[in-house]
Image (cartoon, rainbow, N blue to C red; front, side, top):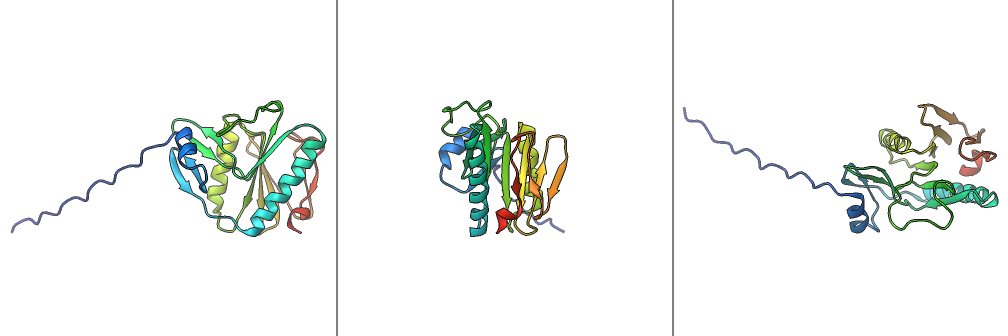
Length: 192
């Protein structure tokens, strides 16, 4: 009996890992993030997602402006959460105090300074495993609180570096005293 020679499939080339700078240069206007050096495409969020992002950024911005506390960033501004291989995420909304990012010193491109607060609005297409993977990345990078706004359940979760997660119902108020003392937002205001 003669053996039939079956060729091994050609090895799949592994993608070359990008640095954060290469990523920012090659994908400045694309809906993608860099995770451990590999570009990952993101689905386009819907209209409701945009409305909620707009509301939370406006309300946080009003508070931080009134108290001269810092800057609010939106539109997936680049935040590097790790190096070698690099991960660069784009939070829906981020808050930087003037202590972390001095007034007038907003960098072009990627920020290596983590914001104190990140807000992610979960879309129906977002898997919870992906959302919490981002939470871990942000917290490990030095973010003090990650707020997850869930359209479906109309709740907000606040995740902190100590591993705690506080879930606030639509009837409750969002407060983040360790980041924004005095800030209080009725959760229902985001969904109406």
